[in-house]
Image (tube, rainbow over all chains, first blue to last red; front, side, top):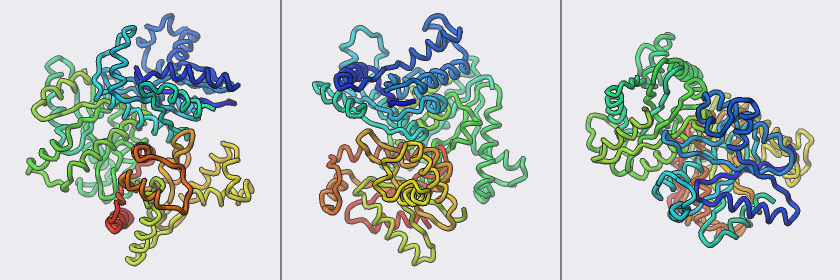
Length: 190
Length: 190
Length: 190
């Protein structure tokens, strides 16, 4: 309940994880500790603790209402954590049936974030980063589609802000300028 | 309660009705039946059943709170329908005093959509389709204004997603590519 | 409760105050009186009446929950005012930690606006107006950043519309065309 709860989002390939890790290091060096929590992982752990699943693949086979309740419980758990918390998640996830909101109302009211950060980059740069990253299999997506996703994510973030009163910050993570992105993120987290 | 509830929206002239009808035909051929419900018509029928109006023109003369309640009741009626339902409506309606949300909170919480689909097209193509369509009298609107409307509709759809957890899908209905739009819609509905 | 409640928003330098004042004059001449209420001022007066602060600078030192409650009370006070009311506020305020929503859910449910108007202008023109305005010290901001703010504000406004059912209107206030902006605003307010 004390400390800040900062939700950090970004489309795949934007470099969200790097920006989170580097800014956490910088802040730790300044005596400002943050703990990063991955929302999906927290939801899975909640499901396991509740005896609903044994492994992560089973998560998507769960009944919709059960998933919703697990989402809510994960939001509650994170909302009750002490200290400064980074919540690593998505403003929306691109699925075959559309953009799935990462923070629906029942999560937000439990999580009570202070800020939602959108890590963004030029869509063409994101495309190139995805092509370079051979470690992950992602559905191929053109740069226009990436731009659409980033645009929709801003709208989701504004809706999250309306419901919770949290601020919405855009942090750009452009090529060759990681240090700027990390500093911008650190400024928000400080 | 069983089945999917898919809200399909689009600005006038985007070809929403055609895409709905063709994709329903395709899915019927695959043994996946959908029923299409027009939200405005359902609201009018609700008003008639409640003895509030006799014809459709009287709808706009109703008291604001009565309208709101009728909207809610129509949402409830559709939300309780069995089977796969397409809800034909607008993300927002352009009125002289601004964009009126098609699915305010009190409708969404009753309707509980699984998806909101935005049928979109290039604004210039929409303009041309409107000019060609002599059967309807529409207020003349430039292509920039159409683009504004489509942009605002994405933001409305994101807000709808935040409240209900529904996915938000964009289906493009470009000139000469109706078949692609129909297939994209069928993929969402399947 | 009677009359219209119109929320008018716009980024700094867009000329919101001028458009409000001129359209109020025009409407007064037509026998349609409007009262303009500044949301921030109303919140400060509420805080003073509640004995929380003595001067305006103390407002930001208040506890977050106290601020939230004062916001809600200000919304309630304005929501209960009689006659036609213009609420002069921001769709979002740009702060060092991001865009802060001007009308979070707990304000909206009390305020119950009929319309939210976004006064907008070309971002480059806004930049020039800010540079010309020596009376105010503002954080320097480039035109791209102004465009980002205006874009995010549309998304906030859509979320406000979703929750309350209010319409969202865009009124452009371009250089040399103040009279058009005033007439567009008057049309909304009439």
